[in-house]
Length: 227
Image (cartoon, rainbow, N blue to C red; front, side, top):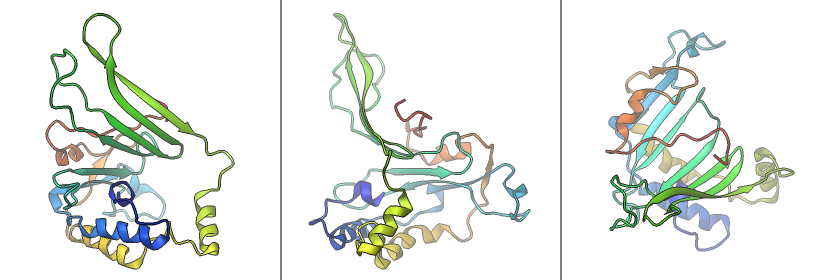
C-alpha cells in the first residue's frame, strides 16, 4: 500500500524512497475493530501442527485511510487469505466518475480503473468505457492490457540477496517504517473477535462485505492474468 500511495521520492537512492514510505505510514489511521474482518478456513484446525482450538486467522480484510490532502476521504481495501479461489497479488484502482454522463445509459456506468497484477504474473490494464458500434450513444466496457513475461528473471529471494550483497536497501524496510506500520495494526491484534469460518475455495467470510462503503464490492481476480 505504501508503494501504491506514496509520493514520488526526491531521488533514486534508498533513503529517499524510505522517507516517502515512512511519511505515508505515519499519515495512516490506526485500525478500529469495525474496519477489520478476520477469517479461518474450515478444516484449518485439522492441519498437522495446528492446535484444535487455534484462533489464528487465515484470512483478513481491512479498510484503511490516509490523512493527507491527496488521499483524504479515500478508502483503501485490502483482502488476503489462504485457500482462496485464485493465488494472485492484484491492485484495482477505481477512478472517480465524470461529473456528467457521456453515454445514454439508464444505470450509472462502472468506474474506469487501472488494474495492476504483481504476481505471479505482471500485468498492467486500463479499463474504460467506449462507444458501441452504431448510431446510438451507448457505451460498453473495454480493457487495454499490457502483459510482461518474467521468464529468465531472478526469483524474489534471489533479487533480495543480490541487493543485500550490493548494499542496495531499496526493497528493504527501515526500522522506523516497521514501527509506523505496527502502530496502524496494533490496536486490533489483541482482544479482537474470533475469526469467522469460511469454506475453502471461496473468497472468505461473507462478513467482509460489511467493511465496504455503500455500493462498493470486492474485486475478485481472475485465474488468467489477461481476463
